[in-house]
Image (cartoon, rainbow, N blue to C red; front, top):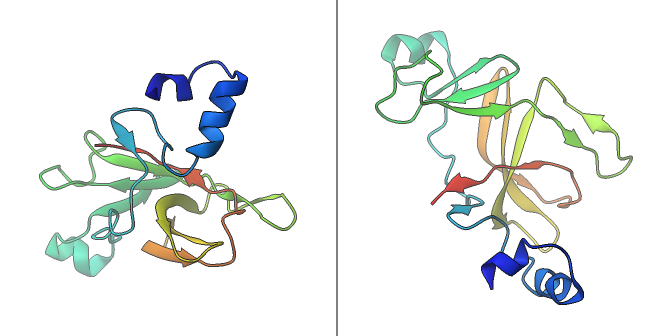
Length: 145
């Protein structure tokens, strides 16, 4: 059944996709993270660099996240969140490309809105609430289960 949801579109598969749109959002073994997954991200400042407590660094038009045990400022083993910007919900134009990174979580904040991870060069919002609507064209960043 799972493979059918990612198969060539037939009437039956399209109906399955429609019925399961909220349940099946990523390939097997991967998931869209829930609220709290990105908690613990903090950005590089002089104070937390001296203390060694930062977990993210802005570089190359995006943000690198360093999981526990990885060498900070090295890109090997880090998770990269690109500054892909978003597609605006009211006019359809692109916003924040090259300066802001947005990733939806699987957690709703209201009937119309959801939580997301939001980063820009100067700060990080790990569980940012967008109640205006999910029509904002943010990226979806799946993580391995």
